[in-house]
Amino acid sequence: MKTLFYPLSFLLAFTLSQYAFSKNVLDPIFFTCRTQPATSTYQMTETKDGYRLDLVHHNGVEYIPVHLGMATYASLSKIESRAKELMKMGSFVQIYFQKDDCSHKNLSWKCYSKRPLQVGELKAEGVSFKTFDKSTQVEDYEFQNVDVHLSFRQRKNHIQYDLTSSFVFAKEDCKVHNR
Image (tube, rainbow, N blue to C red):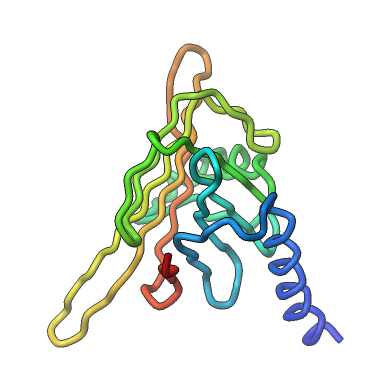
């Protein structure tokens, strides 16, 4: 029963999220990046006033990407602290940017907003989102990736810091939609 339930639950969650996220289901989509199997999905759409970043963590907040790169034993407590803070944003996230906040070309996006926001229970003084196409060649084999970084700027005890959720998608897991 479990083997059938999990794939169906992913499909149902993603389908419902597409409609739940969209105030207007016909908003033009710029790009979609989705892990295979679906654990996280990032999608950028155009709205009347700007852009909307939709983010779905299909398996729940326990699977939000919180670290990219090398980790040591000494960094585990910081990673755990970051994870607990990022989990406050929830499994289904929408972040809005004004058109002036963003620049983009295909899968390369840079958006930054200094406006205070609340995403789920996560409060931040600003947010940035960037993606970039990256190609790495090792002898005859070429890796093509799309790096995605979502950062929330916070201030605690007069110290400013960024909470960053980063993920690297295989190029084939990202699709630029024809506009």
